[in-house]
Image (cartoon, rainbow, N blue to C red):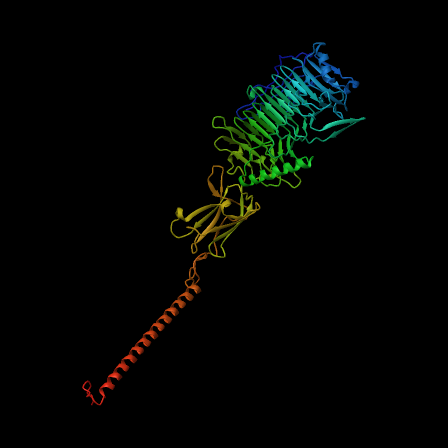
Length: 635
């Protein structure tokens, strides 16, 4: 599926004209691979330059459509020296290409550089690749009292059918408050940056030496904001800057991705890691091709108060992230656009590498590397977020080999089992070998598992050892009752590890406690294993580390012996207390009975004594000399 473009032999370009190939319309096939092409010509190669599919203008003074204008060295200290040279040339000879040559090791302050229609301007130093390149700086505006004013115009503004190339410069950000980007394009404008450094630091020249003064102020507008048809970056370095409320590069098209292009090659994008910051590169309705480049997260400690605020934000975000293992940011964001990345590295990005949104189509060739993209002081990675809408889904073509471990020296190591891709299965289509992965987020590996009855015999304790045991809601503990009968649903139960874990302070060990329930009971033969939730939300046995085991039988949880009396551990009386109460009750009853018997005996004895006295009285009456005993018959 390769289309070759070549110049027909009958086409003979004039030796007095420069022919340009800037881009190819509809240059993407269904496979998302860029169309390759070749340019065949016997004419001098100084008229054009082809580099891995990205073509830059290269003009020669030998052609009559090209003119060079020298900016006098004495004018370098004057404001708007470059803009004045451009405007002076506008009224001169009709040239297609005008080179504005400036002296190296100078600082040029400009209010706003504009480009006339239908012309291409090149701003470049007279010396090729100078050791001390010239500096292009936005001029600071002040009021009548000398106080700085807010800048409302960009440093470079290209509109309409205009072309500007900046070559071999250091371009500074605004040193005062601003409402405009530094570089801006609109309409059919074309901007090229060749061997340029974009910096937020201020350069100061003393004598023949230019020194940089670091800047820690927050940047509120993009360094580059493009709405035009083409932006080309070649050998560009973007130094880390404190962009929190703004993108560093904003590409926002209005006519669809096919009509707006961004090409970058051999460039170094240094991303300052600020928790909660916006995307470094924000792509909307643009086609983006990036080759041989690096997106690297860095941290600059310029202000203690700023560090404390950032640290606080980092701690808060890490706490949330450790609970959910989700994030919503990406250093490169693509919506309704196309992204093609080759020989490009994403590393040490605390806010994630890529975010593919609605209508985003991204291809990562197998030469792309992603590693060490995670928040500070966390092992939970952040590589890619992929999720669109039902009507306009996101698409990602990537290979599993692009995801690497990080070596102690900070370089990419072996292929990582943990991809750290957060994908919405309903609105994100993933192809390539990455789409065949069961686990897109991370892959836990079990080394060993131990399960025993706890000391009180009221449940079981489990210890799990392994690798990548992250608390992201993907791990489950399965307890099964083993019997000779056919197992049913009541004989198996899954427990989410976050709900039963007692100690989980690393990604290599977890301690779990499960109390007695309808399944976990003494005397049952139980086995324990670890399950993992895959990309389709189903549960499967977790993978094993080398020599590992994922299933174990619970020990020390046998049925109680016959002489043991089952006693509830948290309520009721002990056996000794019950016996004591019974003995006491019996003793009380015996005492009461004895007392009653004694009382009865005493009563009867008392009654008998009274009867005897009455009889004695009667006898005394019978023995009276005047009486005759008739009541008793004595023998």
